[in-house]
Length: 565
Image (cartoon, rainbow, N blue to C red; front, side, top):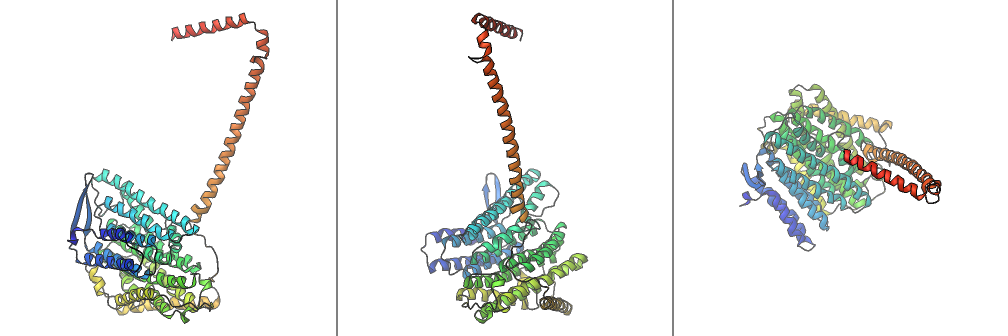
């Protein structure tokens, strides 16, 4: 029976049911049970096009299940469960409903077999997720949410335009492999790129994720960008430009993350960096590279959520996530510190942790497909990840200078969510075969060869040494309160100021011109009034008979003109 019910509808029905329930533990139970049921359904669904409906003459495919959609569907349901467990203490209806609708829309998009269905779910993720930012209920969060919503809705509008053009060109709305050969596919590609935070299109991520609530950031980190990764893998696998876009994505966030003081913004930049590895894998487009992308997305959702959870727990207990205000928290939050270290080791791709067995697939394919420069960039980016996420996050939060803060350990439900996530990161790293079995194509890869392990350990140890030297010599950027400008400054500050200056100039010219014209007209009217008004010279010297004569002449001229025309 569940085969005929789209998985997304389970979340939508739960959101409606939740609104009818009183606040309390029962809501929390519902928020945990629904992702579990959805995960079981995704696991047991047969492959194929399971649910089709008619829509204004189109045949929409609501449930297209294959190995690619299934692996993303499974990790999305797991992420929804972990995020809701982490947010067990939340009694905010807005956040609870938004979390369900957001997860449901992302899962619905993963199983969409056509571009129209994809569009509806695409916009659903945008509308639902913004409430996780607004739920913070500050003026800053409101403005950040508005910027986020404009960009995300804009991505959907571009997708809709591309879909319309694609249908006109091909007569099809199928969501499948596409080639960048027309305006339609370029628009669809751009739409996916906005959601994937391509370079120069990325600032919404660093702007919005740190502005969300403590629990909202964890949930946000799982869905939007990984949905875009799935869409690119589905529609544009093997598109070579993605290799170079992804390489840039792995590089530029490193430098911003190194100088950033807000640890949640550091993790947002780090998220951008990790997306770059996935985009490179999609661009290479071989079966093993796509396996690497899917597996890295799976692992990334877990370890990035774990890092956001640990920093969020610190924010929950201390009220700050600024590195300059933290330090020494391992004394009173030892378990949170331990979970953070597991996330740091995973994102840094230490052997026996999840990042090692997934990132290796992409690096191996980059080398075997003869992209030596891209491979070198990815290796350098891997070292950078260790510096800003593997070391900076746990070091400045838990082990650097003593901040004097002595907060309590994180609430038990947060610890449970972090513990499950950390266990999964270790399990995947120690025994990756179950994850490999879920991937879209058969995996013929063994991460734990001597060459792989020794090479990775050398890279990590040299990166650790470099960090230690930079800290000892004082070259490493200090953790200070500062505002670091990114490219979003151009449209948040520069462009509004330029438009304001231009508008003021145009208004001044318009006002001056209007004043000049009006004064000229007024002067003309005054002169005419002086000559032809009741007291004017012409009225004084012209007798009535003369005026009648001139009127007769004008009437005669009018009649002649009418006759001739």
